[in-house]
Image (tube, rainbow, N blue to C red; front, side, top):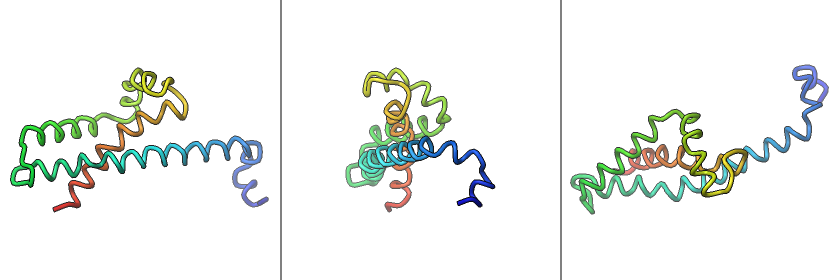
Length: 121
């Protein structure tokens, strides 16, 4: 353990705070990951509604496709700031762990949907 403290001398003073921060990080990853997994249905919808798909609906496909493209093109920090009012309305706060849930979910779902779309034939 002394080897770690020689590399990172301030780690010892951060002890409890570091453990709390790691727990909060894993909590945010878990919540956003679960939501992204279940809302990844948009990727399945893209496959099903595309031209020649089993539920061909070109209008719905284009709406979902463009929405995913727009959300993916916004840098995450800007997306977080834009979603503060939405986060306040949904979880009651725009900052902290609970406030980050909304931005993380909105940011991860389009990426996950694209992965699903690229994996399915």
